[in-house]
Image (cartoon, rainbow, N blue to C red; front, side, top):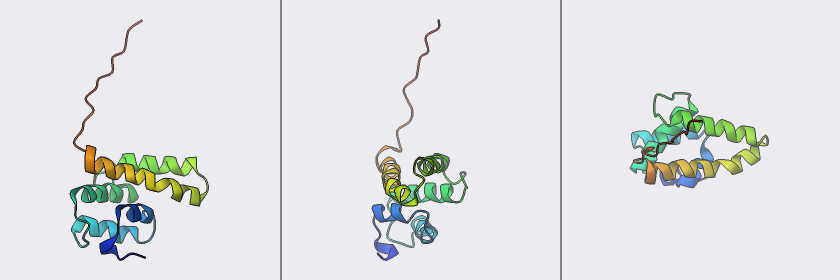
Length: 113
């Protein structure tokens, strides 16, 4: 297995939920590992909050927690869940890297009658 200081984003997403995840996530947060980009720091806090049910660590932690629970309901087989997980975590990483500054700016109008 790749040493923690050389892990890629896709490898990190596959380790979520395994015994190595807390060590790697904490290393991302405190800078122990070389994964110190701002998107990875942001994602690490979200994952830590979702994984430990500490949604106060990052507002998005509750959303990730809900998404992971949804994936587990969609796929009863553990291997299918593991196959589905990387796309979910890749999406959260891409949000952290490219879209975290975007807010919800469109309003929805409801027509009466």
